[in-house]
Image 1 (tube, rainbow, N blue to C red):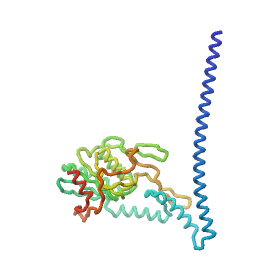
Image 2 (cartoon, rainbow, N blue to C red):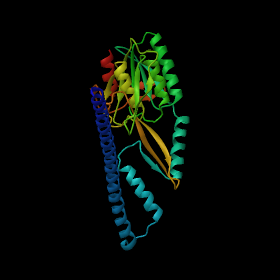
Image 3 (cartoon, rainbow, N blue to C red):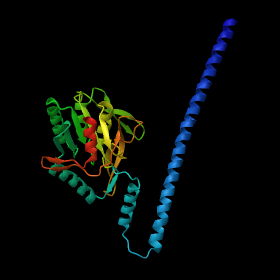
Amino acid sequence: MLKFVSKKIKIGYALAFSMLFGALVYFLGHYIAIKKFDRIISYNSEKHALYSRISDIDYLIKNEYVGDFFQDDLISGSCLGYVEALNDSSCKYFNPEEYKNYLDKLEEEEINSEPIFFTIIKENDKHAYFQIRLLTNSMSEIFIKKFDEFKNEGIKNFILDIRGTSGKRFDPIEKILKHLCPEKELIFEIDKKRNKNCVLKGEFNNSENTNISLLIDEETSGTIIALAFALNKFCSAKIIGETTYEKAVKTKDVKLENGDILILPVSKFVVDEDKDLLTPDIECKTEEKIAIDGTEVKYDNDLVIKSAIKLLS
């Protein structure tokens, strides 16, 4: 009799557990379905509001506007305005001809421009000055070679001028940071869904026993920002200049059905997730930049460089 009762109790527990588990699965399924439904409704509402407004404008222009217009120009202008409203310099919209000109300009700039300038500034002490102009592989190779040469000559103070520097290439940044930073995880890539992945680790720690100052301004943009963040955190580099509101991003070039091209950022390169803006340790506005004539440099009126020299001396 006792065995029979015990068996019934066990069966009762099993049934209760099965019902509880089934209720939990149902609840989770219902919750996920509701969240998905809410997202769809929200997206459809936004989509309806957008197309409704555009449809109203389109109707009024076609039926009441007394001027001349070309339909293709209206469509392209609408797309361009949509992208420009993001107020994001890394997001661009081109027709095929504009896109070709854009790529040609980048290629021409890389071929005809000196990607980096370097010299020794002698004031109170010796300071190795680098002005990074373009993000190219030749730039990173020259930088690493000269950095090591200057360090072997006994120079400990380094000034990296990235004011006005922009560009979306990551490989030149990667080479410099591997060379300078300790063997740690340096930079992470985070996408729209908050997926996080380490994309760069330091290797050689060649910045050890050196002092580095980074010069930035409002026009500093692109992946060079990731370099500044990493050097600031892992090599104790001091940042001098103005806050830049640009971000280090990875971009994607998408060809649309009509042949137009949309360039958009699809992930961010970060050192600290909580630190989004590149802000200087020492605020200093660039009134007049260093003047370079061949190998001769004049920086008497460049307050940012003067501040870096004062800090390093």
